[in-house]
Image 1 (tube, rainbow, N blue to C red):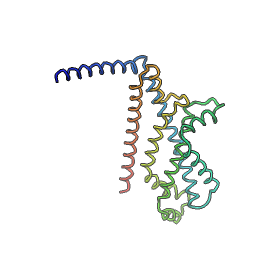
Image 2 (tube, one colour):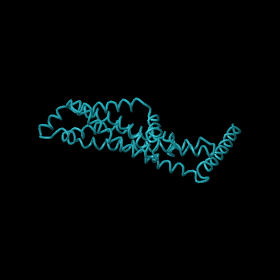
Image 3 (cartoon, helix red, strand yellow):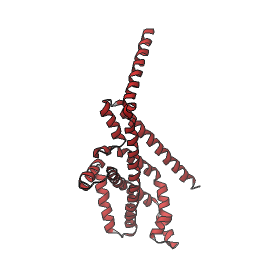
Image 4 (cartoon, rainbow, N blue to C red):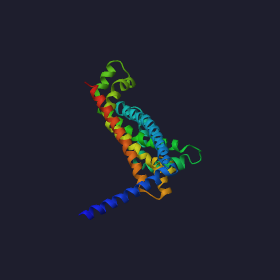
Amino acid sequence: MAEWFHACYVGLCQWSDTLRIKFINDFISDDRWRYLWNGLGVTLKVTLGALILGIILGFLVAMIRSAHDTTGKMKIGNAICRIYLTVIRGTPVVVQLLIIYFVVFASVNIDKSIVAIIAFGINSGAYVAEIVRSGIMSIDKGQMEAGRSLGFNYVQTMRFIILPQAVKNVIPALGNEFIVLLKETSISGYIALQDLTKGGDIIRGRTFDAFLPLIAVALIYLVLVMILSKLVTTLERRLRSSDH
């Protein structure tokens, strides 16, 4: 038994030394940790930009479709929105990213971060639109009638009565969409954008060690998702408490 413990101790010490050497080689030597740090900045930049664009597109499409469902007007706008939703939700986001970079902006000298923001924003907007529209349609129709009886027009009723209630109902779903958006940006490397995932891959290519760089990337994403989930939960709790 003593020999077994001794062998385990020796093995653990050897593994610890090997891990320490790999850590120094992967992150300390030549300041390779900067690939992760700079990549994290790019990831957050793309995510935030795509989030803003997705929210704008999503709310615009949701308003147009809801207006058509409620009033029967804006048929052309509704048809365009339906085509947009069908195409975006029916094709992989990586294909959309490649099309926008290699086809749409093929002859334009444009920052790759901007391309990624546009691609992920357009993709996220389709899902945000359906989430918001479901929230709008979940509000009792009497709310719209009450707003109109108070003298509000359609836009005012949506802005002051319907949308606040709808957004409150769909906060969890929107939070999940934003988390998915954050993780989807990890494919930005397909257009040679040096995001967080690409940074880990560059380290792997320099040191020929995949374990620590990829684990580090996964842990950073995990921490980001946990922070975002906490923020969404806090916002949801505060909105719930405001109902009382």
